[in-house]
Image 1 (cartoon, rainbow, N blue to C red):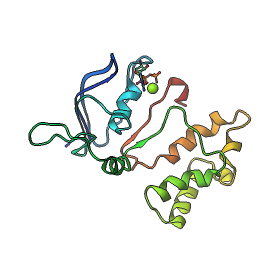
Image 2 (cartoon, rainbow, N blue to C red; image 1 turned 30 degrees about the vertical axis):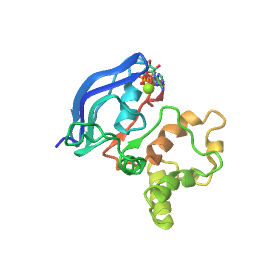
Image 3 (cartoon, rainbow, N blue to C red; image 1 turned 90 degrees about the vertical axis):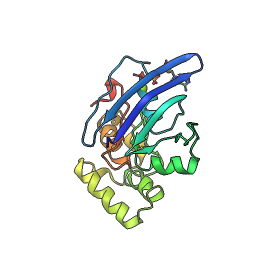
Image 4 (tube, protein in one colour; image 1 turned 45 degrees about the horizontal axis):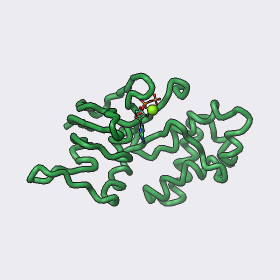
Length: 185
Ligand SMILES: Nc1ncnc2c1ncn2[C@@H]1O[C@H](COP(=O)(O)OP(=O)(O)OP(=O)(O)O)[C@@H](O)[C@H]1O
Ligand SMILES: [Mg+2]
């Protein structure tokens, strides 16, 4: 079974049809790059996969689990409850194009928050993991600096990509990253 299955996906904003019956599979272990001009629908596709945005037709499955609208036995589309959709999102990390740390939290707190509040990881384990991750990307000495400080003085292009990589709480194998060329550092 493919990790991500997209079938005949259609998504419009009003009159503007952005995704026109799109179908593809992503297998476990695949690294996939979605390339296209600005406005062609790359971010829209990723938002649909995470169901941050709804879609009009088609089906998306992650590890066999239907995203957003399970098809009922009679063929109708039924919208999943927000609680169920939120549960599914726990396993799909998305790193947003415009991304900011919480300025009033330290780098360490920024990395631990999602894991503690969304994944319910105990504080000590979350802090240990965050320390390890910061060390791995060469930012251990920044652990106690506030997000706001890391973004001042033109340093963001240095730290931002590394911090971005740590904050997503998807399981790594399902992480999606909408990025403009400027963000691919
Ligand atoms: N919330 C929205 N409401 C209306 N139109 C939208 C909305 N979000 C995106 N669009 C439109 O949908 C189209 C696809 O946008 P999208 O952001 O998916 O493009 P993209 O391929 O990610 O572009 P970029 O490379 O600039 O990030 C664009 O024409 C955009 O203006
Ligand atoms: Mg985009």
